[in-house]
Amino acid sequence: MLWTNNRRSQAAVAAIMGVMLAGTAAAAPLVVRSSGPSAKAYPAGKALADNAKLTLKAGDTIVLLDGKGTRTLSGPGTFSASASTVAAASTGSTLNALVSGGGEKRARIGAVRSASGIDKGGKVPNPWYVDVTRSSNMCIADPANVTLWRPDASKATTLTLTGPGGNTTVDLAAGQAMTSWPAAAAISNGSQYKLSWEGAKAPTNVKFVVVRPATADMTGIAQSLIEGGCKEQLDLVIEAASGNASHG
Image (tube, rainbow, N blue to C red; front, side, top):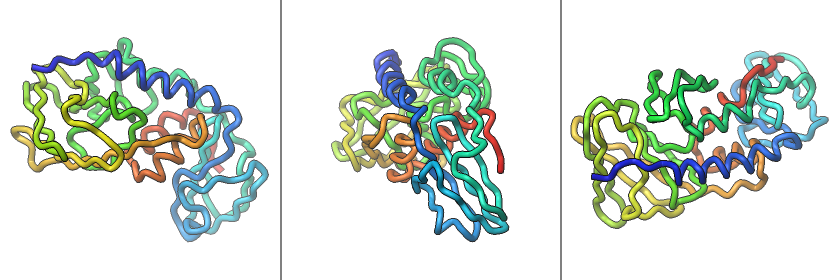
């Protein structure tokens, strides 16, 4: 049986997030969500100058992310890309809490999490954990440090990972929500794996995308998640950064 020891992977992720957070103050606004008639003009991933003006129509909603947090703009109207942005509440401590897993904490992305990795709200407690129940693109920074997570840890189960090298199995005990991705199932950029276990309605398909953020800040990592098509992870990072976000 492969028992969990996540200290190594969590330390690696914490280091990555620490580098990101160190540069957040200088981050320029980045469009991270966009909907409405002007979505083509302001697509997700579009970087803006600090003095940029956004002209929105009725029905437009744009979410901007910078080093202070997020800002939601709703049309119609003309808005400054950086004016009136309110700093997110404890953005740094929130994101660090997501990777440290030390004791019961309340994070802005959901319900109470614990060191065991069990989330009473059913949402993945860390944007870098692979939720075994979701098919998605999974952006990672270090292929050698990946964590598997399941929302329901009430029963023991065996995960079967099917990929380029064949099948690899991972045992999870009752009450065990997390475990390290096995070294036998090598991960590289573009690797695709099918995850299955007894009782699953259908296998889960995960495609890994190795990201190398262009800048060491939150907007840099958000840009990488957008380019990698890792929507679920992007949503978690946006929620973590929202805090006391301002609305236009």
